[in-house]
Image 1 (cartoon, one colour):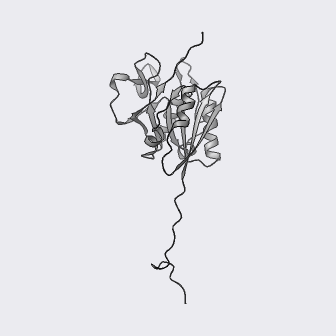
Image 2 (image 1 turned 90 degrees about the horizontal axis):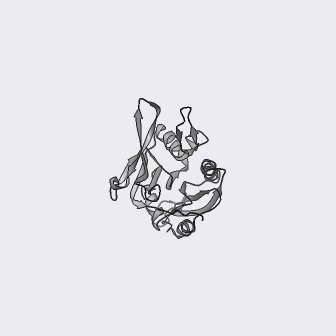
Image 3 (image 1 turned 60 degrees about the vertical axis):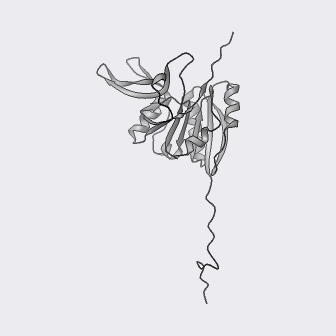
Length: 217
């Protein structure tokens, strides 16, 4: 007589769901701000996720970001969280960015000390520039506690599913100089490629990063 494995007396035991893996990558050339180092290790890890933190060097941010993406793909991570080496991330950063489990989700920051520009960008088309240009949302115009759909973000703090990288051409990040002397930074280059591939760039305005600036004297 064959036992009924699905009976109440002998139920099939479900395996626990496999934790989602996040690679927190901090791209750097030579140094990481102490405030960044401290904040990254202080982030709370949400239930159902595991985190590996790495500081990755490159000749420039594009190379370091590409290295981080490649490590995440090669080692089977589900997400990459980029935190720039001059950003201080709030303790609930991972909780907020993993909540919706979207392909691309970012926090926001002011671009530089004293500036009104944030890292939230929208692509503008003009006849005099075939590439268009990115206009950055001003600080007074950032809504409170909203999920925005942007055309691009500066990568102060950005979480990306590794599936996005697998659907884009390599290199994922490039610093571009056009013949007309205009430029495109590596993070905006990635967002440009991702949006063309059909991905939305989301920005959670409840997640504000602290932009750490220091000078040598």
